[in-house]
Length: 144
Image (cartoon, rainbow, N blue to C red; front, side):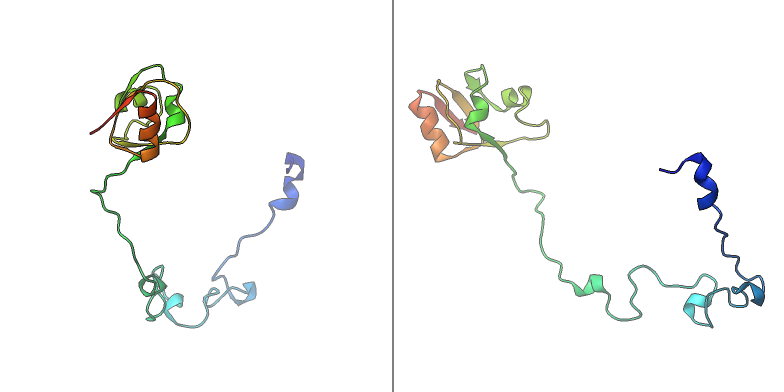
């Protein structure tokens, strides 16, 4: 940490004054060298330009595709349902209890965890294990 009393040591570097005579060390070409694209006013190349060589961004393979129509399911495990008071569970109840986020439209129920009561569940997808656990407790599953 620098104190105000120590500022004098750090802030006394002079800026480079370009084009102010040969005695300054930065006269004549102002540190730009002799001729060439970078010596000209407005000179230089755009980002990614490699001097006519095939640019890196065009050399590397580009693969993959994100399908905007793909159905994406939020994952819900049985242990998340164990704390719910409702017997009939659907997507609205999961959103109200904060298990699903607001934008999620469909969910898949997986069998991780245990439940000890009867549940009636309406879901988009369900695993075999989760379905067995729910039906063994006298519950029902409806897939929409």
